[in-house]
Length: 186
Image (cartoon, rainbow, N blue to C red):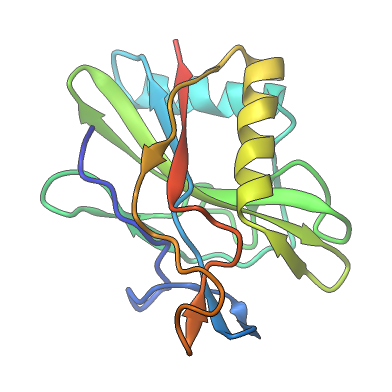
């Protein structure tokens, strides 16, 4: 695989914190928890295949979420802006005012004949955007992509980006286990 950044980054290039909120014991850092590998001949074809699969899986571009994030992907540490780029838009399976799994994707990078995207997904409960889980959102995304979009879930990829609650006095990734779901689109 290409080099994969461990974290979603804010507009200044620092590790993004979930809405800037504190979450016991400290700030809630946003891990990369999804890798999507797409078989395509061009970046545009990869983008189109992924957009269709996302729509089929129920992850539409929805407004009401924060944006302006970025992430590292590929050799040379290329920093990609979030996709979708729409102001306040993310890929989400529900409205921002209710329970939803949502995420931002970054890429693509061509590596060994495939195109790669990475993503940070979280589950929240609206209307106040209350954080619920990184792990459940990752797994819901993978399930929906498999069941509704014909994707294949490969083995999880260890990224070593988990900060268990209580292991740091200033930060955590709550229930995130340090692995990203690998989703493959043929």
